[in-house]
Length: 363
Image: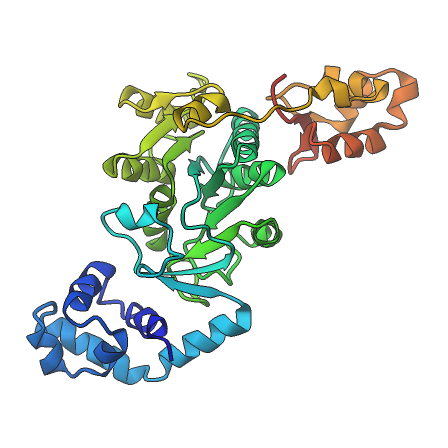
């Protein structure tokens, strides 16, 4: 049995966090040896009090087969387990104050990938949706992996935009075998199929709990050279991610919004505090010393009928199919459903949950 599975099992003791475990591993480098130690031996190492040593021993005795269970479950579900000592562990994540000692992941987690975090509000505007998808797609197309939390709202749009341009990594506040929110099950599969990864520090089967998400946020910012906040209210989990990035000396970017939108107040406060205001993906790529690849003009991809529809649409004001039809000549209106589908497949327009359509990005 590999030592990594003993370490993973030790970390499931709710009384022992990664900081205490790191201290213990400094004197007893084998997790399997720690798993077999008694209270006196653990206390004598000096890393744990008698109370904590007792709690850890009780955990190990009550769950004596847990390392084997984790190994078998991960093998069954094709989940990789890596430790902070492995060469495959993300290099930049090791540098943060409290890096996870163990990561579970599905898909491909490249240790030295260039990555940017993208986070934002669960309750977003059409403006925020358009910005998330455009920035994610164009930055991913330049070879940068987009990291987000697979939450409802801006996170989901960032992943979807990235999939149109390249790779993305979803960091979960639950086990990687749990789809949370449930409607993102297909999205998580697509991320893995496209060469990205779904990552967590929590073992398979771990259900999402509110306490897990702030810890999840440190991994999003820790994996990323910089974090972009797209929309955030004054009190938002996205701002926690930004604060963690700042505390680690990482770049923080924010997209400005309307002064009348509560979803913009968090971004504006970040900008006041020193975050860089950005209006185009190219600004972030320039900071990373990367060049955006040339892209074929949208207008070059349009048929004459599609061009009529395109002129009716905007970036930040989605229109229903009926509204689009009312604005078009009669001879085009009959073909609207097929034309809209063709334009979505080309990535020219996007459809939201309300079945309204808008341009995918600015000209």
